[in-house]
Length: 562
Ligand SMILES: [Zn+2]
Image 1 (cartoon, rainbow, N blue to C red):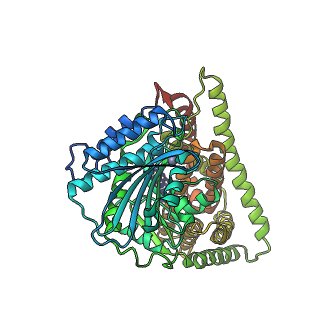
Image 2 (cartoon, protein in one colour):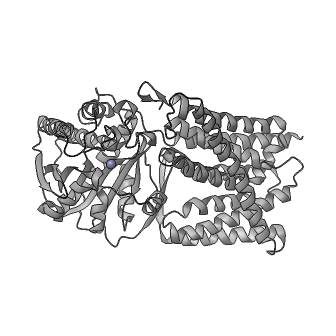
Image 3 (cartoon, helix red, strand yellow):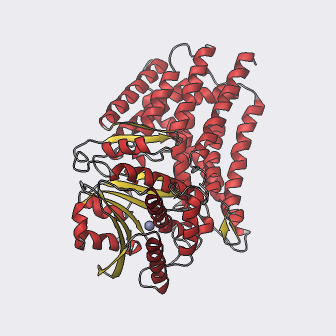
């Protein structure tokens, strides 16, 4: 082994470690601001203190606990100096929305700030949607301290009966005269109890809203891919009612620690206070912007934007029309690279088949090991507590999926560089094809395929056997991982909803990614046996850890391991 080989092997390993750690940390919300913070600031700790009084027991519509929560909210808002209105009515049930208006000085339309205060009958609803409810009250408190006088009318609407089909939102939209003035909506939701306030839906013509979000929110989290995937699912939120009426908005959700969703352990102690902080930070920043904006100008006909955050550091956004060109470029570049390696495209179908087979086997083995181990562990537990969606277990599942599929797919030392290249090129063609398909069937989601292809193709350029070329290749390797792996992490974080499909998708995609980065994996293999063992070991430990944290440690004395 030459010094150069060892250096490049180490560099590739470090790149993989770095990309993994950053992807895992990407869902970590900011630190919670303590209750002693100045009154003008929003504090997750203050929001949490109120949440502990609200999310005591399930409070669905029509129960005494629901009435207690409603009374508490009215009392809280009144104490802050507001005049909350109980807007009662019937829409498929007897409902009471809680409306708190702030009159604008020269309104150009109403900004609707929304969350629902009812819970499901099966859980106390700390995340869903106590988190959104207390966030708005904390924002209202800070606004009072600031003496905020917005230009536009602002209406804070805590809706009732969301869990039975967005009933309160329907009732407001149909029977409240103020609904006609609504120009934009900020809705806060949760399908879990952790992670950042993820911007997952904006509706049509999102360009200006994405610009606003990127400008005012310090720690962005969200992507147009999430919206495309969400629209494939049968799920709805209160915002759906307004989108159907042509009013667009911002939809945020907590999506990590999804094991708590609609569950008895959706309690304040299982909710990350940092998530409340991020909800409050994002909601306040946007509201300050929208409250003084000219809402008669633009939003409609302003065009579509594709966007995604990079590790919560910044937001990448560009016109949706670029998606197709980026996808076509990615596909063409991939086919050219393939031709350059094979000197013929006749091999294409064979190589594509081999790609599917390799990825299928590697991904299948990892998922089978995870699922099988889980069955064994569950069998030995007196009380099986299936909590695969807690944040730690989901992060470990991500590490297991990436590192084990990479370990399985790592070529032998005897593997010719040209063979690794060919496998990578076939993978690039597959992902280029996915990018084009995504442009049509996952509008706003093509970036997740185009960018890894374009970046890796850049690294596969001339001079790849010199150290400089390899450093370039490692750099593009890291960047492509930083586009793809955080998306996989979000997927495993949602595993509480559908563990097996999430694991299969995560395993399959990372196994396919392992084919795209064959040259880097070959490079690692050249670093020596210990390196290969290290990759296996990290993956295996993460796999066992994921199962143990989910099954055995995940659930202790009524509280989830975070
Ligand atoms: Zn909800």
